[in-house]
Length: 455
Image (cartoon, rainbow, N blue to C red):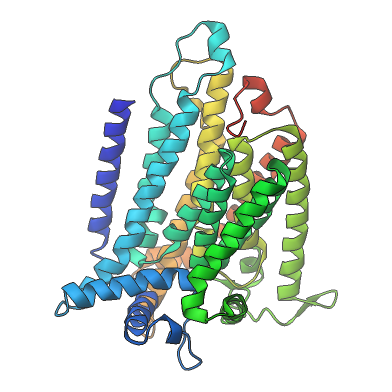
């Protein structure tokens, strides 16, 4: 494992180097302009006066703290530095979180890969002492072009709340309910998109922990949310947060904001308030589909939780489904909202591969066990990279338009409906895996005798 750790460090260092190289491209102009303006504003007027009807600020308070700190560092240490310093500083935080997520993925999968199991013991085969699949998974995340593009080029913050979501699921699988809720609340306060995990977090707390534990976890989460929000929104922080989130949701009343999903087939950037079918608006139809998907997911999750104990594969698979679902069926989805699906799907692929190789008691690495699920992850990563590049290029050339010589941009643009269909098929594959896992054969927990971390 020591050699594996050295390799992990090399992967992370190389990943950081690639990101520094990628920063040669300019950041996304609109978002970076917001980060700089918001950081300067909170530094100048303080958190209590940050939100105002006179300025546009549609983010929850969580990440504004990072903007505040970034502005303070820039103005305190490098007051004469140019705008490029801000571009570097605001991209540095999500870049480092990218690497932290890669390290977390390695940590979780290495424990999974090297854990003793009954098949190995009965066969007399020596247990594994290394974690090559865990290292490969970490490298897949660190060098994923969509992940690199999001933070190092675009300058977006999706890495930060996604790390909190992933950590929350891992902590739940290890039986650490209170810390899981703390991690989840931080993710939610950075970006409320994390609410997609609420069904999983809530059901696991209720069905897997005694009332004392989940009440303590809920109290810790509410207290933390209040502490984060109150400096910005006052004593009535929760009402202020609700109003802020409502304002954010109403900013873009359109079908699909360049996202490859169900509504991209209907038409991107169409008004989602118009009538659609059966007296429902487009937006209401998407909401209804989402609620149906939630009900189905919850029913399957309840069944699976009754069949197994704290099983990482169950938690990661359902987390993938619940984060994927809203992006595919709801309106008003930005293209970047797919980001959290990628690390969760990657974990599903490699946990499944490790479990398959362990079932048959193999000592070495059976690379073929990655199979079709890894292919789906690769295709989704490529599609998301293309999606990000398309939007990035569009706004970088906003006004004069993208030159016709940019054949890649127009190729992506011409086949948007095809990319949407492929993305929907991958989502359908995740749904099918969920059904098979919940309604099919007994869990790996029972087959391998993996101990319950909470017991």
